[in-house]
Every structure is written in C-alpha cells, then in structure tokens.
Image (cartoon, rainbow, N blue to C red; front, side, top):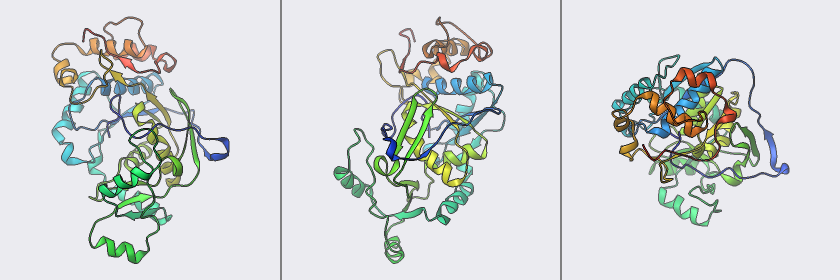
Length: 336
C-alpha cells in the first residue's frame, strides 16, 4: 500500500489508560539502520511519495545504513508492472539508490501463506463470510470513532466448523485475525507516544481477502521483518495501522521497528495530494524542474533547509536530523 504523504486510511490512534495496557512496545536501538520505501504503483508517483522516499533515504544514509525498495503490488490488476517500472525509474531519476533488487509483493504469495499458517496454528485466524453490505449495516450500529473506521462486530468470530463449512459452499470467506482486549503502546519518532486498544478501537481485522489477496497488514510486517527493516518512515495517514502491525509482529515472533510517521504534503491551497493530481505527478514535474530543485523544495518544506533552493542528496544526507523535520502538515510553494 502506498501511504506516503497523501490520502487517509483508518482511524486516529486513541488514548489508552494505564489500566488498559498489558503489552508495551519500545523502539529498538543500536545497530545498523535499514530503511525502506514501499510505494503502491496504482498511478504515477507524486511529490508526497517523493517526500516520504527522500526522508526514509536520508535517515538511513545519514546513519550509514541500508536502504531498500519494495513495490507493494499485491492487487496486481490495479498495479500494472508498467507503473512499477515507472516508479523505479522516477526514484532513480532523483538519485536514490537501493542496496538490493526491488522486492515485488505480487511474487511473494507463498511467503505470506506460510506466515498465515503460523497464525492459524496459534488459533488466531477464522473465516469471515460477511458481505460488504452486511459490514456497512453492522457499522451503522458500531461505535463511531469519528471517521471511516468502524470496529468489526465479531459476527463470524464464533462459527462452528460445520457452520463455516456450510457457508463456504455459497461464498469464499475472508480471513480475520483475532485481537486481544489489550493496549498496544509505542513511541513514534515524530508523532510521540501512541496507544490503541485493538479490541475496542479496531476489532478483528482481515489478513486475507475473500478473493484470495493477502491483506496489507500481514504482507507489510512479513516483508519488513524478513528484509531486516528496523526503521519505517511513512505518511501520518497510516499511523492508525501501526498497532495492528505491532500485534502481528509480536505474534509472529519478529522485532518491532522504529516508526516515523511524517506530515502530509498539501498543495499551495492546503489540499492533500493524490495520484489524480496529474499536474503535480512526476510525469509533469520532471519536464519542468531538475531533481535537485524538487529535492531542495521538499527539504525546505520539511524543515531541513532554511532556504527554498536546489540541493542534492549528498548535501541533504550530511545535514539530515529528525529534530528539524516539521510535525504539522507541509504546504507546497505557490510557484510550483
């Protein structure tokens, strides 16, 4: 999934009381940093994507670490290989270099299946036969968290084997993972302390869709863990998914990375960027500006440069410091 500086996903991470907390997570420290950028090639990259890629790259390189590229093309019909190749070319045009061949999620179904089976062996997976219409109906009666995310009601959580078998004759199920009634705490490098009670604020969530595609939450934690990623830089719009991912990492026995959820990038009018904004995608911008001019503009918007000027990755790597990165949404200049 591409959640790198544009759009919205899920709900805000809610506060937890001290009595909620049974599991606390602290970021790891020490050792060589391994960062990554993981776009979803459902359209041409835009400046919000580049901002995320740039900050992930600068953080890893400033620490003398590794940088990886992963193509999150789980939904292959929406993510043609031509757009994946274009994303790779766009990033290379800006001077980004990665330390291993790009990883394509569409080629890793067997890896995700083996991890799903590990969760099944722990009794954490069950089939869900709810249709979209049924989920929407349930949502109208579920707790309102103030946005589009609703807590799953657990409708299929206690089906008998016979009932599940009978329903599967009429409809292929999605697979959900059971979540505990406990809080997940972590400290985000930019957004500070976070806490969510998974049962209260999220509910059991999907790890494989009814059409057989693996869910983002499972795929991303498996890939990060197996490639040694210990620093995740991504847009603040995916902050609410982090407790679910920490829970999966814990159940699979993998370490939890450091997280930095960066501000969202808006246009000069304060509107969030999206792939439909063709005037701000890299197809148009690369014809009008040099990579150094765009990098410098983004670095200035993020707080890394005092002036809005051209800059290359070598200069930005040398001066990079997370303490200088702004926490609030970033606005593009009017000249763009």
